[in-house]
Image (tube, rainbow, N blue to C red; front, side, top):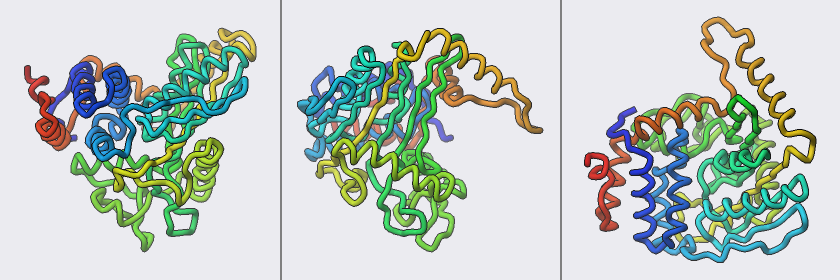
Length: 356
């Protein structure tokens, strides 16, 4: 990776906050979105962190995102709710949905909250992790913000990466945190490859003749591949129905490609399911069992040449710990883009802060 700088997380958070505030996002909202974007980069989800800032700002300036939304519950029962994001920043909308789900799960044991008129909200794991601090587990589903996947055997892109995330609490061990697209890779990783000037590996994308597509700058000429062939296609469809259609959000041909369209309302949908461990018994017993299973898996017999068996979330945790100490890696190309953006916005460039 062509790294220009290791940026301290607080420096990056402050830069993103200032950029959003300069475009009219209320200070508290700017800080909240910046914190979540920095968290994305901190855990190594570099396709969903500061790399998205120029795109978000384009939509804010073009009116494609509401700077001062009235995020509200439009229908609910004891264990369910639908949150209308009023086309606000997705990070704000989904955060509100997770808070509501946690509150409801505390009373009912299980809660499902859907969003409509939301926007791109960053990596799914950010929200699946939130219930962990309350001795709860989280399952998160989302409709991607552009269609990159055709139905199995087809050529029209009617589905997206439609990610799934799960946060499972443990005791002494780190929590088990799964974050996966229903495609072989998330489209944000394609963007990150392009920004770093790297080729994609075989198996990420194919062109319209069914041949491997390796140049991320030509991504518009092909489409992503689903995980597990036809099974991944089916999973993407079900996740989209749960995260989008159930809550009244966009799905299929209604999905707006926010990479190309900075004006139209995307009506992005997400859903969060929160389960209170106490509704099923002693949370401590559950976490003890998770610990034992984690240790059994980690210490199980390995294939020749395999140094370690990883649990979901462990590598992100290691990156979080390392980047907290040495700074978040920012490629030279992205640093140049962010500093050019800073000049356009009339704010201090990121590089100046890093060098200070």
